Structures are given as C-alpha cells and as structure tokens.
Amino acid sequence: MSADLHLVPPPGDGDRRSSDPSPIRVALVDDHVLMRHSLRALLEREEGIEVVSETDSLGSALRDLRRQRPEVLVLDFRIPDGAGAETIGQLRARAPGTEVVVISMDDNPALPPHALAAGALGFVRKDLADGELPQAVRAAAHGQSYVSPPRASG
Image: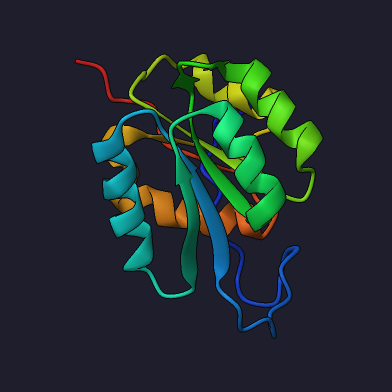
C-alpha cells in the first residue's frame, strides 16, 4: 500500500453529499487527556467539523460510536485497552459507517500502510496534527485516504 498523500476532493466529489450543510461529526480516542483536549480545540476551530465525543479507551469509544454515530473517528494507534490494527478492525466491524483516522507519535514508516490495511482511511503523525488533522478528517468524510508524509531523515 502506498503512503501517498491524498487531499480532500473538491465539493461535490466523494461520498459526502455536497448539499449537506451539517458538519462532519468526529469522535476522538486518545488516552492522554491533554492530547484529546488539544485535538478537540484544533478540530472545533475548523468550519464544518463538530467533535461529538472524546474518550480515553476502546470500550468507551465503542459505546460512543453506537450513541453518537460520528462520521469520522480519530484514534490514537496505541491505547491501553486496544492494540493498533486489531482496534481498527473492531471499530470498523462495529461501526461500518464511521471512517477511522489514526494518529500516532510513532514515525515508523511501516505504521501507515499497516493502519490502512486494517481499515483506516487516514494516518497523521501527532507532530503534524495541527496542520494535517483537519485535512485528514475531511478526506475520510469524503471516503478518501490521507497519510502524513514520512519524516525527513538526516
């Protein structure tokens, strides 16, 4: 699987209805409260994105998915009660209408293809989230993939 960067399609393309005025509903899952609050603040300052849930565990996320029905779930790749690709698979099976965007501190180049193969549509490095997470959320809501570029070596 390629780690090419895919940007959000123009209005009218993709899965989301271009005439749909409602915001993209997003749920956040990260075990670090400060990171969750930062991600919420980042996304909520974006027009057309609404954070409907934030939690620190897979169990809570599964309950929130049933209750809130977000279009996009932003998921830390390593949460205490879930492990990477397994977690993505469980979430996709239980909420097939919710797209997954993975965030991670780990810049291992094998992680993005691994996450995408497990069913995620996006992968954003946490150090790039400020500039890239809103784009990744919009891309996922349109059925498009988005992957942070690999860290430059040297």
